[in-house]
Length: 158
Image (cartoon, rainbow, N blue to C red; front, side, top):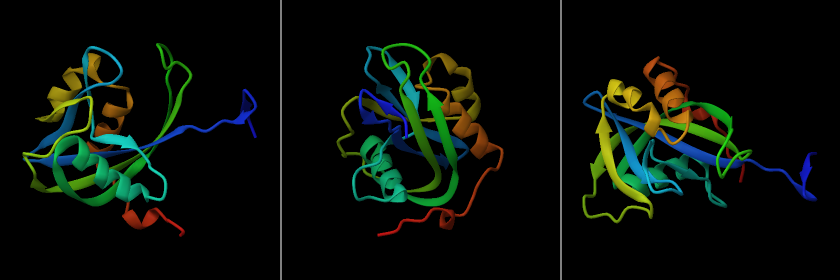
């Protein structure tokens, strides 16, 4: 087992949700530790005692005000930050597809989230300089290419 400074190494476990309505993807404009807005899927960290699916639904609501129903598992993605203040940090992202159910316009969004936005895939692709990470487009591209797996692929043992 690898150790860093005497402790076990563990990647940050995150979830992300691809939500589509009228051909547009639900994204967030967020400040991710900087002064510039970046684009990301509704995404965040897995919290103790919750399933990956529960985390995806929770994070989507907290960042966008949308209630969603998960429909598919898109995939698992591993990424190491190559440069900048978080250089060397590792992320393990579990991505889901979801259907939007209901928007709560008065919901208070998470700190750092400026707004939720709906973008056509080509609009997202054209804004590569604003992606929070390459995971944003990779997940969207895989979904748009039809990559969908049953939610039953994920198991949670209590």
